[in-house]
Image (cartoon, rainbow over all chains, first blue to last red; front, side, top):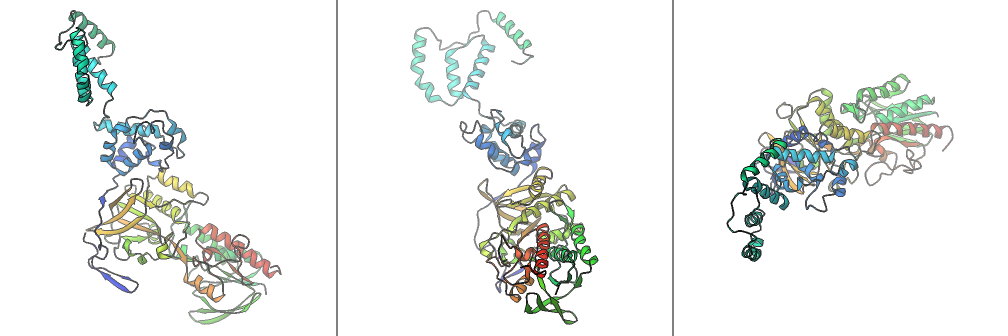
Length: 219
Length: 345
């Protein structure tokens, strides 16, 4: 906190010396206004017009996603990048990924910022740093589903249910549905300990192989 | 008596003198300094916003017109007394050698403004930390072709420009806007980024007010083409930590106060009435408004006339404005003075 030890200041004829500005401690955040993040984002495809933004809020006010995703605010995403506030951007990564690419923001921007593309560039920045949004329930379900199909050739309802509720952080709901599971097991509609592959696993593998080849090696 | 004394040799006074000559009147120009051109010359303005033309080119042309048109120029001179009234004034002019008297049918007061002295607001550290400078000092550095930190002679890497220092501030009894600070800061930032592409330049502002033709475009240019960063928030205070300055300012969009290191802090200082303007208002008995500038007869209908017959005003004696507007008022005052001497009102 040491400041201006030797120089003197005269205010209305009164000479003030020493640490004359520090009569009250002040809680501040040291913010370097670091341009590195801004520069990096501007090099990513779509990020070129980022610096033009003057923060009027036209984009966020008319944004399609803003009413549906709490905290989805393109104006603020741009501001955070300009300020170099990576921690805040990371904290908002869940929202930033939700852009619907409807382009309303871009068409309305009075300053010729390609806002939708800039938001895209910010998501690319997140991707580059390995920060992804929390997957949706549907995405989690799809992943478990595909895993089971590719490993066993079939779906096992008990395991599916367990994994789905646990992976989406809803153990409580899983417990609530235990009764229904029990009924299904008693009626032979669901096995508690499955794990077996389908009867024609070899044929299934052949199907999977062909599908993988058709999809260019993915899955 | 068809002659006019113009008091003040800045853009408004120069333009008034030249226009009066073009109307065939005799003109004497009284200038306190030893050189014509007014504040733009005395404070070494570099490029002029918004066209980025050298100040020398513009003000130089105004000076040249006066010198070529047979205006009787009195340098290092001040008007100390006035006798008589409209169409028959006798002005006492003091110069280095003594006193002389000038006869005048009409008088145009174009005595200008002076920059706010930021040491009045000690929280910004002006006068304490050498690397806190005014926009006028930066202008001088830009004219000299080298912008360096006064503390160590090095080119600063990170510069903060604080807007509205001594403007829009009830604490210093200056509630008005200086009108040119926004475009001047944009211009200076463009010049800095042109000259030193690695320098980071931040402008801390409350509102950007770019009212003049071409002003807004220059602001866009600073942001779009030169990467100047505009931070919405008024700087609160400057401290020093070792070799660097720490600026406390709120990024209001983020709703967080922060303390940021900078190498140099430029204070965009406001305009107030000059000593000469105050002295002439008192000498000619002209009313001044709450802002300290001369009050014309009617701000809308008679903007360069005063309540005193035969006394006209132009330029920043009437309030903050840019060179363009000051010269325009000089021409308007010349027309009013000529019409007055020809028997009009």
